[in-house]
Length: 237
Image (cartoon, rainbow, N blue to C red; front, top):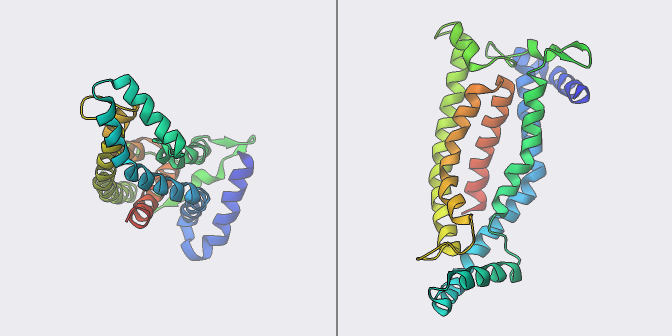
């Protein structure tokens, strides 16, 4: 973690002439963009998988007619069809899972007062007057209208807008996937139907995350969520 801290410090030093006191925050945004670029090929693969699952819907309808009320045979047939066509019902979850290590790295980096036996200098950096190692509860203690509380209100506003956009799009996507993987009388792929029903609401959990994690980690979440909104608008046209 000390190596990563040094990288963030050096990047912040490079950005300091442009962003001044918010240079470390800008470094986190760039780091987030780099992570998203790394997983972008998987996001493109997930989009292709979504289109492939939609294309399988007529064939699944035929399997439903063939097996009738025999749900066990129907589930087996659908699983075999997905395997034959090399389509994973849960492939869209992989890009998000691969981002988790980066998030937790930032979380721990800005939650520790010392790094490698030395004081964590990153905790002195700020975003619009709010310390990157602070939390929303800390800004509430200073009262409303302060720079720290206004910074969090701005983040909440961005997250709420992006989460709503993602919610509407995810609900349409989940409806399409649900039509493929769920039958009218039972679930064809065990567990997938429940996942697709819940997924649209996960967009709003980012609000809770921003409220409880250090500001640096919250900035990662906001940047990544905004990236997802743009990425989905392009890939799922």
